[in-house]
Image 1: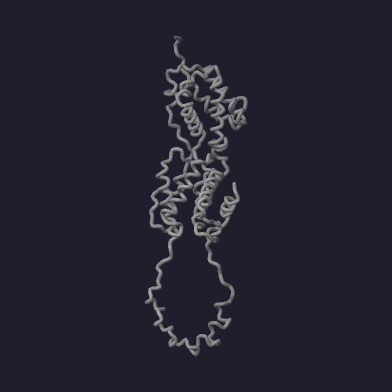
Image 2: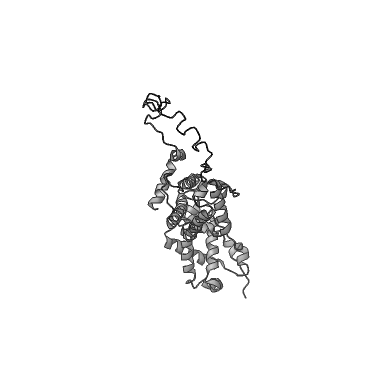
Length: 331
């Protein structure tokens, strides 16, 4: 995490009001003891020519008739550059997110255009731009995603990188135009993050999407060189180099362990019907999975009793045996 993100995270400990409270002037200029309002210095007794005859009677245009009224001050949305300015930040920010392997998988099936539109409207509404955000509140929108503090901070980093790239100044102390927006984002963390340290959801305990992806890659590397079963995967690998199989395995394990993924493949019975996979072949595949866990440094116990981190994952896979295997008559 870079120093800018650390500074933003530090603000979580500060009440938002502390960043916006107006400073108090304690210099004694309004208590009447400095002689500026007691009339004793001759500045308000009417003897110095301020009796209205010197042009301060409203005839010099100070009565509002000279058109000096500039209207209301610009909104924060206008100060940010309006629609064009906000969209410019969103374009770079979302581009950063797409390239960020720590969090980009959250958005794998997201409608990018709709996401950008909703983010714009949310920012526009919050900064006085006159828009109406019609999306869900933050707690509802992120329910079930098991987002960690580390993932939230990664998102913040991607936003700060976008501001840096566009030359938009920020100080995280309320002194820059965009600071209130960043402070508002900080205020949303409690609604967005539901597994702060990654200890509550098994998916996060395993190390999240990156760790599961690594295990699947190690598993497939073993399978394709395992002469006992690699013929079973030949067609899938020939179609697209195994990309679709890989993606479905990652989603399947991610979903099964409580991660924010959706497995879109067929159920195990339908996917393997007619393949006549034997119990021996299934256990050879399970051996390759155990080898992948060894390669990844994920511990498991001898009988998968739940005492080690990898036990529940192995139990989940082994439980599929009945749906995957099929005893067929000899040909």
